[in-house]
Every structure is written in structure tokens, then in C-alpha cells.
Image 1 (cartoon, rainbow, N blue to C red):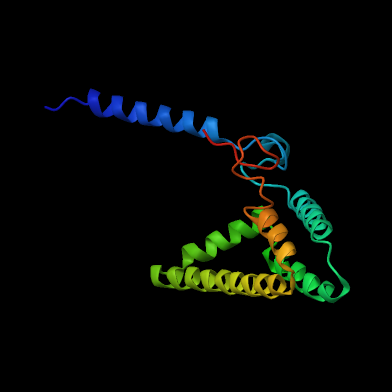
Image 2 (image 1 turned 180 degrees about the vertical axis):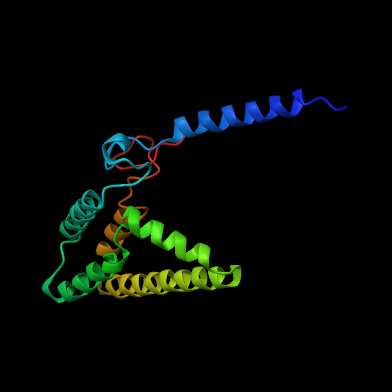
Length: 170
């Protein structure tokens, strides 16, 4: 009879490692509400996210020093970057209803539903890409450099360990 000790030991080590990694990479700091205050893990406050996005966009606009001819392109770009109204955070009841609907579907129906959702996200992304390209084409070479430096990964702050709004890795 094979020993059950070795598989149990391996499982315990893996579970401990996963818990340790999760604790080290748990999001902290700016923009995150405490899980205990909102009752959900890993969810950002949508109002706070909107505030931060508006502040970043205002900062970018100021840095770009746009002229009057570029304002229309900026407004189109800004509108394209806004999340659609129907993409607001789902309530617990809405998530439960969606889960129940998915459970009632056959696997091919679920796959079709997921494909439709993916297609919708892809369409939105293409619209954002085109709006960004259209606006970028209106900018001078110097403004393009400013735009490039300030839009990489949400304003260029990500990737710097502990930087403003950045992810902390390691």
C-alpha cells in the first residue's frame, strides 16, 4: 500500500506557498478600499476609480498643452476612454442572476455567451485604439513624446517599485 504521507506533505507545502505568495502580492495602498469595509475582496471602488482616471486625464491634458484645434480630438479621445454605462459594477444579485443563467445553459450555449462577451470587449478595445490613433495624429512631435511618456501603463507610474499607483512586485 502506498504511503499517503508524501502526497499530503506536497499538498501542504503547495498550499502554504500559495498562501504566502498571495499575502505578498495582495493589493495595498492607494485606490483600494479595505475588504472588510466593502465585504468583497479585490474590488476597487468604482467612484474612486473614476476620480483617479479624471485626475490622470486632467494632468495629461495640462502636460500636452493642447491648442484650440486639438480640443475636439481630445474630447473624442476622452469619450472613448470612458467605460460604457452598461459596464458598471454588477451588484451581488446581478452576479447571482448571471451565474444562474449560465448554469441553466448547455456548455455550447455558455461558450457562445462568452464568445459574444469577448467580441463586445474586442469591439470596445478597437474603438479605443482608433480614438487614440486619431488623437495622436493631431499632436505635434513634442506632444507625442509627452503622450508616449505619460500613457504607458497608466501614466508611466507602473513598473517603478512602490511608485505612485504602481504595482509592487517582488
